[in-house]
Length: 276
Image (tube, rainbow, N blue to C red; front, side, top):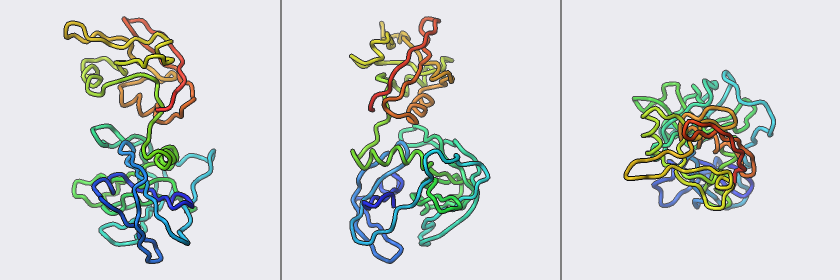
């Protein structure tokens, strides 16, 4: 349970093929649920149930509290292999892991844990020792399909960014630079040794256009590079996925500094992120 309004957070892959959903509560009630929103990019989805005396939402760490640490105790709750209300325990094994997501885009920033996570745990909570929500269990790494001590969860900080938008609009739109990119073209130029994110489009009337950012263009079937984003706030950008993952962690209204390269010359521009 996410809030008092009956919103329930789960994984997108749990409800992706479903035509309807039912949420079973610990008191034995089964309530019909409607899909409020989905975000395949973070493998998160929100359902809503209605009824009286709904369970209280899970508490979450307060803003500004210490970040999750490797070695910290965690607990996972789920229904592995249909075994309802199963609790497993472990520790945070690593942070900032990544897994392939929908359409080949990586899901970044995942929590890795050795708390047993199996098929049926997806969408369940990962809790700290105080019973607070720290992640949403999402996947395992196992050639056999059973737990091998390597499970992954979407951090609660990511859910706290994504879920309110899913509730409000039904989808998640990350902040935007006002620039357009293409994953396949960028991957191709990265394979040729060009690091960074190749700008392919600049939104008319945007700050990016006013800053003089120039997109790549086609001439006689040859792609002529324009500006390439080589760093964001002083940190090197390896490729498009790297850039998008970092922008995704920001909010509209924040300023970012881009290091651009064109024709062997570098310069920096500062842009204000706009709504996605």
